[in-house]
Length: 606
Image (cartoon, rainbow, N blue to C red; front, side, top):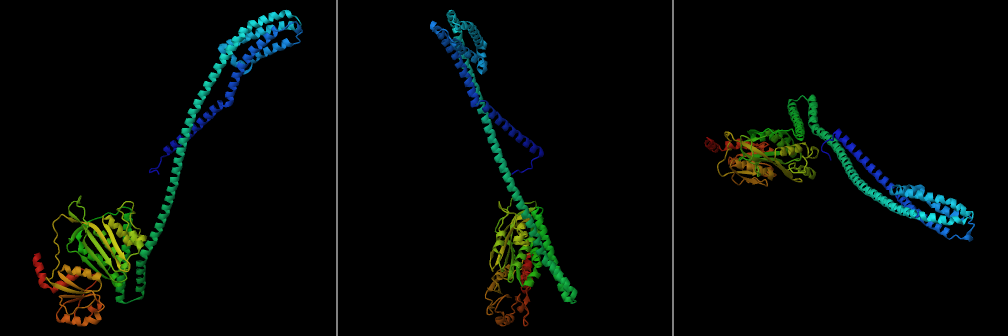
């Protein structure tokens, strides 16, 4: 797969080289087949036939001359008249001469010994031509010419022998040269065949490579097609998801607006206006989440850390969701570790979005029960190297949110376990898979170089742990608020059957140096002495509350409660607690109960 686009001139040059290579390969193939044809068996056989014919005819000339000589020697008086026998033998001898002078054999003989063989053949032919006159006399019965003929034939016998020797030598040289030419052609065939084989191998290699690239191109195109289809599907899912997220607050606003047109009640108008404001804020929050998700995906979201008061931001964030939790009857409580510095350097805007996302998810999955938020030090340690300018130290803040709801589906949990910090992982879960709030929360946590963990149990709720780094600036120390502390051995009774809620309230009261006894079964324990009683969720309120409250009244024991029936108790003023329950709310109610302790705390600060 190419990582850059090939330019036009490179493509043209590559195409020209490819065509030239194919043309060169075709030329080699033609040359090979041409040489093979030239050195074929027919050509070789023709050379051998000429070689054999030249030798054979020369030897036949010599043999026929001996026969003719013997014929003349053996003639006697009884053989006359000859009746053409002499001319027959003479014609046989002359036919051998003609065979040596004509055709390819004659052409070949002319090249022997620079024409000497041809001159000898012409001399022999001339001498034999002169014998025809004497033969005609002998045919007519004159035997006196016999001895002359024999003598003349014997005189040319040496020339015939020399001619046969020259033909033999020349023929051998001819066939040797033909063998050399044949061997040379065979060598050419071998070289060209090797070149053709190399070209074929290169052609096969480039063909296979081209097919591989073509196959990869098809796969890449298929992947791109699937990617485009996935993008279209994601776009359709995102639009459907946006429609789903925005539809509820918009319908709420439209519904309240229609109701306002029909109602004239002032109280109803105020409630409707509050509901419209709440729905509008929810709609704006949804739009901001979508905008932040788009910025994160485009890698354009920047963090802007500032040094601000941490508890104020946490409580303000929780207060935004108070109307939703009140409508569902959910009880919420927040605990901020007093060992944390109150002023920290952090991107509070993004931290608020993370907490809001976790709260929105908890509210959605909790039909009834409680939601707790804890802000504390994390067990993880932050890197102290390469700290920003003006920073004294770095630490890790843990945001723990727990609910007692239905828990999360396994598919949602699986999508949330994606860690973008690990190799071969996705950038984050899709909003259509985990919801808008959790998708934004997940991406913001890892954008802030934090970590996200969670646990979930069906019908028992889920808990999230978010670890994000924060900094403490190296400036003049900002005065820290010292929490009010009750006198030692101050004991409070917490009547609460919700163990989760009781645990967080116990941590809050421990901040004020109050030991807490939790009544897990909801009993009022009226026979025990306590400095403070907090009435929470209990099934024994109607049966035990009246006598217990009267006893606490007699002992002037202050009673706090967030149970509606207890708050409306007619015979004793029970201090009401409101959700979300915070440490500041408890401090404002507990501090007046122990004025001496509050005075000593102020003196200590001064």
